[in-house]
Every structure is written in structure tokens, then in C-alpha cells.
Length: 300
Image 1 (spheres, rainbow, N blue to C red):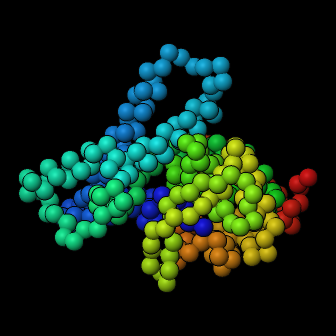
Image 2: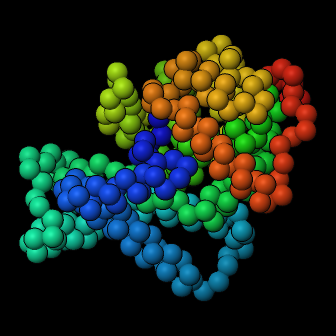
Image 3: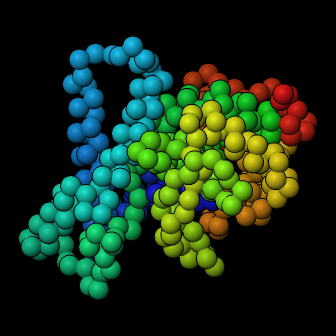
């Protein structure tokens, strides 16, 4: 279960962005195009943000939480709008750099369905403030899921952050967010709504892009609850339950159960959990003092 739209080289720190920067400085055509695509995505995000701020005021149903999810949706929309041909800004930047001799043309570059060179890197790094907002929003549901699964809430939040790019890359169903924070796919037994999205899968350690169908939910709470029910009820993930704050044990059990194909999944989840712990500590949040002794304890 890989995250749709999230590049596997970046999850919890700025290393992915730094590697892209280094590759671009070495005149790597693919990295230069990816950087141009990132710039277009950021520019689109700024346009959407400016449009939102130009509204006449809050509506009757507006709140801090609804604004958070609106911003999260706009971030996804900005990334989606920059894919394919996008606004054309990325193509213009690459063309200008190539003509000016600051970048060399891509030799034998492959094209995507829209006819433009497919990017090889994910979106820019998620700002710490946005990470903190994601942690605060997820905490109540993560605590409930953690009690059911016998794991620390940081583990659940980190898993959601890893799979969804800190809430920025969720599959969309009919123009609406799927609220699928954990990359849960819609298998043959799923009877609810679904959303199709591109995802990264690993075969013999080699990453490849593919399309997949993901479960879609009406609310974030429903998405987290279904994730907890999946892990609590499937024997493949028995080893992940009751692991408390041991994120490595949790991630290892998930990978062995087939939840993820990325060979570096355990390290990424552990690193993400470290960031989550720091953010929760800064916000004055602590792990539950008493974790359930068996998955399912404390639930109705």
C-alpha cells in the first residue's frame, strides 16, 4: 500500500529536496524538469491561497478545522494541476533554460500521456508549520485508533504522514478528497466509494509507477476508523498490534504482512515518527500513559 502521488525519496526531512537540488546543479535534465514542476506547483498553490484570502469573510460553517482541510485540499489541487501539461509554466522554464544554455536537453526522455517529460521527483518539502497542523488535526483520531490497535498515537500519525505526504496527497473521488490517509486500496471485498490514483510500487527493489484503486471515505474520522479496523481484523498484521511505541516493530510487521513494497519502508516510518514525537512534544502532547494490552480493548 504505497502512497499515491508521494515520491519515495522524501518523507520526514529535507533530504529528498536536497538531492533534487544537487542533481539539478549537476545539470541533470530530469532533475531540472522536476524542479521546474515543483516551482509550478508552488506557484499554483500561491494563486489558490491568494484567491481564498480574497473572500468576503467566513461562512456559517467555517472553522479552523474546515480551513485546515480546505488548505490541505488546495495543496493537493495545486500538485494535480501541475501534472501533465499543467499550466505550462514548467515547460516554459525548462525551454528557456535550455535555449539559454543553462540546461542541456534530455536525451531520449520519455513522455507521459500529455506529451510532456514525466517528472522523477515529488513535491517540495512540507513546511514544519504544516506538519504541526497535520499532527494536531490527526491527534484525536490517532489516539482512538492507537487504543484499538495497542500502539502509540505517534505511530498512527506517522503512518498517516508517511502514506499521505503529511495529508497533502490523497486520492480524489469525484473532485472530493478521499480522506484515505493510509493508502488503503479498494480490494474485491470493498463495497464503498473508491478513487483511482497513480502510486509507486516496488518490484524486486525497483520503483515503478502504476495506477490503483483506493478506498474513499466521507470524513477523516471514517478513514482512520476503517484503517484501524483493517489492522485489527486482519491476521496478516497481527505482529503490528500491541507494539506500543516501538515504531520499528510496527513497521516491520506491516511490511512482512504485505502492507508496503518499499524496501526502505521501516526506516522511513521510524524517521517520520521521530518528527511526529518532536512536534507533539512542542505542542505539549504526550503519548497515552497506558496502552491497551490487546488489540480491540477499550472499543465498543
